[in-house]
Image (cartoon, rainbow, N blue to C red; front, side, top):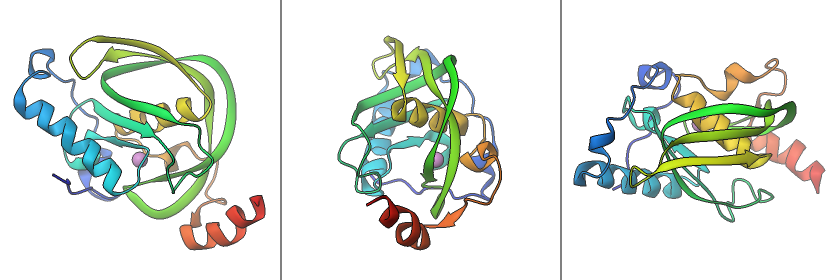
Length: 178
Ligand code: NI
């Protein structure tokens, strides 16, 4: 089932999410929610989707990058379920790249993100997760876990001067990249 995505201005997008009860993860309802979030992410060509974006105050996000038309140059990232994730910075050097967000439709902005992070938490079957993400993968992790704190990429921008409407961005930025 495709879920309704909350846009910036809906309080759900700006509310810090509550931890998921580990005992709930294997329930039918929770597993159905995970499937619905993946379906919703795919429907809107997102590379990630966090539970607050579908009006749920849960520390839960899904992410996947695979030949995404919104990010044609992005290296692939396997389908990942992040439950109660904790992110620690391994390489604090920052890289600036363009981001968008399903809750901020048709906009792009340049955001500086840490180059490498470590992620711990739980996966789809409540199994422990512990992995290192670098570059674009690290960027997606930081973007999605910010959502769990009620934060969006606009908050991470050094200023608003790069904020662009998608159509203009495609015309002036994407085409310039060749
Ligand atoms: Ni987002």
